[in-house]
Image (cartoon, rainbow, N blue to C red):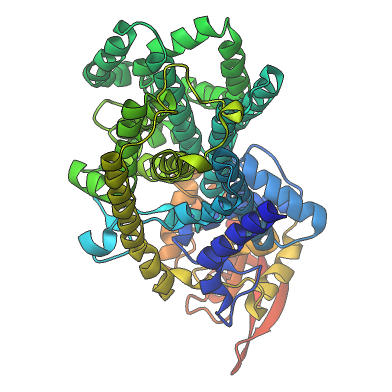
Length: 603
């Protein structure tokens, strides 16, 4: 019962931190969509909307033509849930995102309890989610602005979207914690193999959910286990070789990137982990190969699809490879922003050396190298949005570091409260875990804990700033009279492609009706006739219906709003034949959403 109460308390605290600022708004409902850097999120919602209407094809989600290489498994799942249970796409989005986070909080809480043997530590599981980057001091905001659109922020910033990256980080955190618990607390070989196998499959499956969370989880997992293999080995030269491979990566990485692809370069980025991985393969008599194989198999649908697209010179993938520029993380900004985690990582490493605890040495060394490499991938050739890798590393390190820090604090300050050695899978033969802690070391430990507490509380000012920043908590409702009219009018579209006038938002139309419409997100997927779609979007921005481009793009219908200043029905009436309409009230007047059959030859 105590464990249930502790875990429940952690979940409640997390929901208060992540949701309570919305619950106080008069316009909040479960179907409300968070207007938080919403442009990309609404594009992802297009995938959800298609699935909610029973369409799961491999196409660009708005025109439903061309191909999509963007990982979309999570969006298909929540869209399928909406289709199965008759939910609005936005409601399924909210439920899926919150369930993923609740599950993660539960696993973090359980990990804290199992690692420490103390029920109350489960309550601490809500803590990592509100850590910040000291941006209130360095940038007078809750996030740090870098070049272009690059930013640095804490876990609360990346999880607030409830998108696939948020869900992917939740799954990645769960997988990493399962690996930690399997190693640290499972003594039966069969149970350990099962848990590690499950974690391996989850990590691989992330490739089909969200690329950055997948790669971040892979890097952290591989570098930590490789570091553990190195520090538990009897020979030192593999450690020296791994260290040597780091400058080799920076020297040869740009050449690999020039001759290969970003994916190949990111694989090359695992070079420093190779010596440790080989040691693991030999030591486990090939068992580790099974785990790698499970990860690769689970990742194969997305990875193979991307490789095939690149080999065929898919125009979107060619553009996407070349578009990630000026998104690096400056050293000074990255170091300051990481302080709240860098300090405990250093302290855990020192404690590992002092007590000869191999896990305490390997974990900070592994995550430190992985974090630095991913955050500087623009320097060694991959050049794939280093700032996003930095954010994802911050989040996953915060989640997995907590249970380890608790065990370190226990050993130094509360040794009698530690898990009994007979149940502790991490008590190494050569460790000094049973040696008493001296008075001076204990005093230094108290000072270190106080410093950590101050850093944590101080970093939380970012979250407080975010909590109070109402502009980032505004909501979009798709249940209004106008949106209802759009959905009603769109019923007459069938499977036709709809072009909307300047006053009818194509993303909104897709969400409320699922209709095929003219829109594209440059960074997600391109339709078959993307050049025509780009022309139509540019013309629509100028309040012009480009009849020629519409005909070339295969437009079948046009949707207009009678309240719109750009009166397409009057200006292009010869090409339009009314199909259906639906009225809505603005309070003072009554307007209509009108669906027209489009005939480019009639004009």
